[in-house]
Image 1 (tube, rainbow, N blue to C red):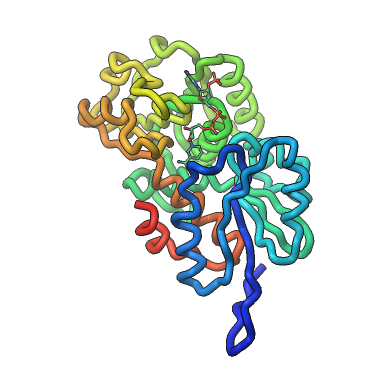
Image 2: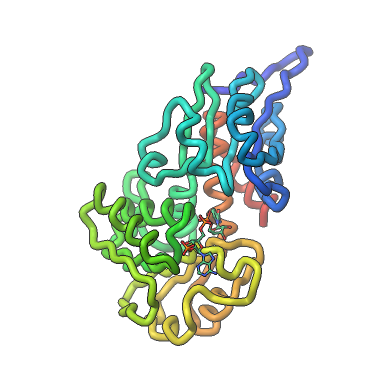
Length: 293
Ligand code: NDP
């Protein structure tokens, strides 16, 4: 799909794209999506579409209106939208969650850009290598905290990027086991599931990713400090939470001199990929970054 930009005296048709979720008021997406549309002269408005579950079908139907480019999807609808769409990208099917919907020729297509967003965010921090436009994390051992929607995207992204070993640590063990089983249906990589951090054996070149919501509202960490302290100095700790910008986990990791980053860079890169899918144009990433950071 490409957006035709009107020139001359003809008024440009106003296009719409928005965020579907419940709640949506806290979202940072309009902050960096709107400046991107404006910078490229695309007459689109990025809106917040608060959608309780009982209005989801109606909301998805409204995306087929001619002025609608598509949508982002957030909590709690990332999984529920799958059966409501016409075609789902294979990666989003494996992950089981869609965060980007594209409206094209009366059809609705579902994608998951969280996965690539995470890999680009890690690569930007100097992790891994880029081989033929694909980010490789070969040589890293990943510890993933969480097994919810964001963790599922991260787990597939990490294994697809070639991590040596993936350990999924989650409060409810069955959810971690379920995710590990799903991954092993597609990839021949060692994936382990745990719910007790005291069984962790730290390894060199570790990458620790928090994909739980622990730390979002309170000063608590999803990984006890005494466990974190056993990791090698070259460990990188990434927290998907971006508000607060410094979670308790990140503060502890910094005190231990580990390299760290918060989830703003993932938010930026997943949003940039969504923008490209809606417009079929490269996202103005530096404009988006300046608007967000
Ligand atoms: P989900 O609700 O799907 O998953 C929540 C996860 O947190 C589960 O693993 C859950 O464990 C765990 N959890 C929740 N409360 C506790 C607790 N008290 N103790 C231990 N574990 C707990 O949420 P998402 O996966 O969608 O989001 C997770 C986080 O990632 C959020 O903070 C979100 O803001 C962030 N995120 C950031 C993005 C970015 O671009 N930076 C993109 C997407 C998400 P259990 O399974 O045991 O319940």
